[in-house]
Length: 84
Image (cartoon, rainbow, N blue to C red; front, side, top):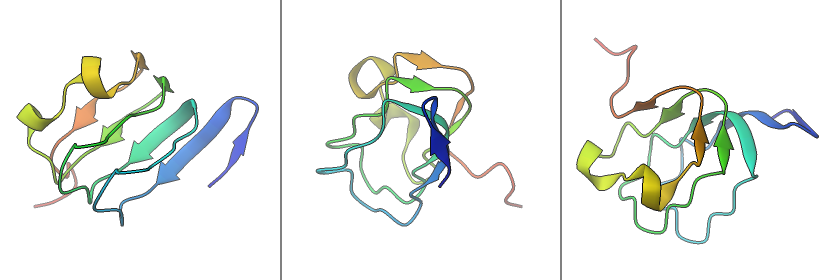
């Protein structure tokens, strides 16, 4: 995980299955939360410069107005774009 005053460039939390109690920085470049089993308790950073990977969630579980981010520079992926 690399970061500076601009925030964290790449944050890989793919091993997490729950967002309960998770505290994320205000700014990240790319965010991997691909192991989450539910969106319950999920509060994303205010600014995500690139993509968010929520591969284990259904699209209808995630709502950007509820979960964030305020600013998203990429896309939210609900399936692994590199899988067969």
